[in-house]
Length: 209
Image (cartoon, rainbow, N blue to C red):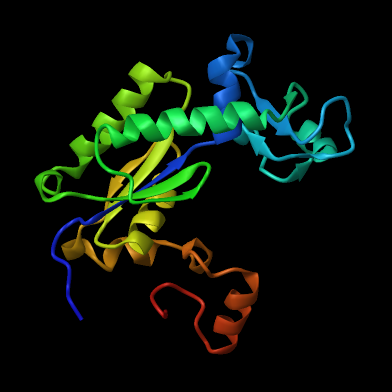
């Protein structure tokens, strides 16, 4: 098996995508705790996305509105705008593609790219160029986290570890150090059921894995 020696992959995840798009488009929502809901004019549903300000107050995605309001009484609820998010997605993909080719779109708010040879020496600068282009041409309220690593799986984990608004690089020669600081649940594909199976096998830490 080939052993990578350089950064080869980038993984990008927009932070609180639905909520940040709403804040970019609607100035009165900026800097305030925002919760995006599936429907308008009802409290009997859940928050499907929340802004950074709401997350700092303990609100999480897929949380009942009553529970979210208990944590953040001044939470501003806004119904989802799928067409708006699709337009924002397309515009963002266009801006990122102007910096480097997008290899695969994983969801409306996640994508991955191959890092070309000319950018491998300074991936931090590459990440800064992407962020600056988004801020200049789309708006400063749409933030993203970026992870760089030798492969897509590690880049995705670095992306998550650097949230929010991260630009984190895991170089091959640094491995496995950064991984040992993580929880098993931080590995894509390890959910509660897999954690229980690993625990039965005596594997409860990243070091053991």
